[in-house]
Image (cartoon, rainbow, N blue to C red; front, top):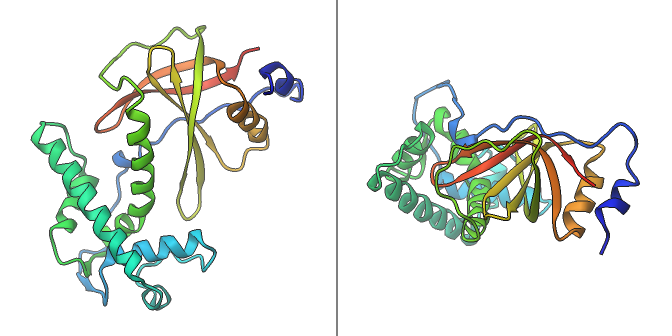
Length: 244
């Protein structure tokens, strides 16, 4: 196994990569361009799953669920995945509501779609539906990470000069039509999840990836900022560097 020192020795004097501020996808604001209903030939979420499958298997870079090419390629597996996603988020949002947790407008719109005609969409929600397979994949991984961690609420910032020993866990790629961001998830000794974001492309990322994949623990200094998603708490790590 490589050591941090041996990997860092390859780095140029320009320094180590730094992460940009986190954008929480569930707090995004998105504007109505149209509320006119559009009736599709298939379940809109199944079309989204088909589009997602085609992109991930090299069958085409389709981003429009209204495309005839997507509808022609839909399979039973796409329909089954759509039903799985619908059930997963229906139960999750209901749990949030029953436990008095705040529910974002994104989640409210999703819940409304889940309980309406699956073939009817508007321009307002079609983009949201298109993202659901990616969100579902991310949420399944996050559920695994949360099982390892203390996700209860906290508000303490760590000191700016703190050197924190972290255990690497998983990398989650978050992407849209025009951007890609790698989310690196790590765990503190007291079981707090930490997130480091690196937008693509970043020429120094391969060195960090080498450290992440080959070191049992990594000592990081930077800003550890308390963050929260709808059902768990974590640290967002910014202005960070790897300590020798």
